[in-house]
Image (tube, rainbow, N blue to C red):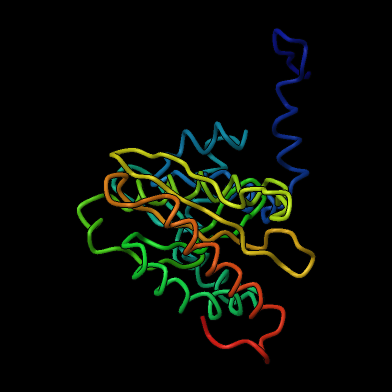
Length: 235
């Protein structure tokens, strides 16, 4: 006999639904449950976010840890190094990273802030590369990454305004501990944002207008090199 919950649904439905989903799908669902601002997430929270039973989450975690997709921390689970290695092998990301790295160094030198290259992965923002400022070493990298992700998400999800119409092709976002992020899009061949170039610094030292001017110049250089690499000099 099938038991019914107070809402009238069978208590066997979650188990049946779990059986219809492959182990690969459930593993990917678990990995996608991590958010950009997450450092470590507990098993119970992963179960809540995914809707998977805790025993299933426990089994999946063990396999994902064994393969390097997840790592155990002091307070929970975090994404592992294998995911970074896989992402870095994507051809378009290799080209983007190789092209942008000299520009990141120049941007760091010109502004004194940390320079980030990020791209959109669905609703999330992934930092592909960064050149960090020594002046920000006393601050947590998670604070840098969080305000950077907020600024990059805005420029990656918004239509690009026309410069001829006087549109401002950058955004400024304040963060914790006096940080500020200035982000501008790197345009792809179709004129849509392919990545975001972001400068993060302390508000008392980083002037957003100057940082934006340098970031926009670097972003235009990267865009040109991606579209016509045989004609463009390094950044």
